[in-house]
Amino acid sequence: MGVARRFAQVLALIAAFTGAPALADPAQTARDAALSLLGAIDGLAEAREADNQVEALTGAIRAHENGLMALRAGLRDATLRLVTINRLFERQQEQVSRLLGAMMSAERIEGPAMLVHPQGPLATARAGMMMADLAPAMQAQAARIGQFARELEELRALRQVAIETLDAGLISLQNARSELSQAMADRRDLPPRVGDDEARMLTLLESVTTLEELARGLAERPAGLSANLPVFAAARGRLPMPVVGTVLHSAGEEDAAGITRPGVVLATEPGALVVSPWHGTVRYRGPLLDYGNVVLIEPGEGWLIVLAGLDTVYPRAGEILAQGDALGLMPGAQAAGPNAAAGSIDEFVRPDPVAARSETLYLELRENGQAIDPADWFDLSG
Image (cartoon, rainbow, N blue to C red):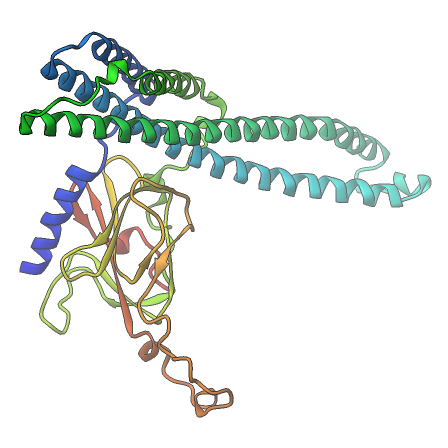
């Protein structure tokens, strides 16, 4: 119980300090960040005293951080929209295929045979007219989906530019503030004022423009897709396992060491691929206590998916994941060794598949900091 309680406390601290709070309106947050940054730029231009410069730099840094917070929310929204568009496109493709198949079958039937219909010639004519009406309607729907796809690409491109611009501006400001604070502490000559550095000031103004464009892009989201976005709460009982494996210990069940955990322990094969079970933001990735590498995914406001025990982790903190994206690999990818000879006895002796799953992945689900039995949400029958 002590290990599990310590793990829960560390998770709570990570969730509190590494992730951005939920944004009620990312567009307004981006707009406010642009205004704050504009005010900080004016402050930098006017600040002559060191203390005033530090204050203006601090305001500019906070504005950048708030802008990046809004950007992460926008990226998650764009990722979910991509999933939605792909689903719409797949359904549209299936409908077009069925319609084309029906029309090709009708074309192969010569004139007199067209009258052969279970409900007679009138029903045949009606069916033909319906098919003729369906074609333009489906073409219009395909055009609409294409428009959404193009819009999404533009939004994603805008987000990428915003990330690069704001990251560069944030690093520059942090360095300037650090240099100024260190010079003040050492009582030595202050570095050149940021307000006199034309290149830096132009970069800050570019960040303001980027934030304004981001705010417009977030505010102009089409309502047509909003209702179709996948919602994590609706996935209860249908979440796929993040790795191919079997349940070794259920939630609340003691393991061989007598430790009880609120999550499940999955037995996997060495080097198994771990994927994201849902769309979300990577809130944390890295070592944690004795759990190995841990990945925290935020699939929705107030929710955390905890995956612990990975050897290799791919995404970085802050990245947006789609369902099925690769998270990393389990330990033991080279367990077989480079000297395994072809035609060895291993090819003829088939080990127990459960015994062969010698690695363990810990899976936990939390809502507002409280652990929830993953068995209620995940399909653990694999």
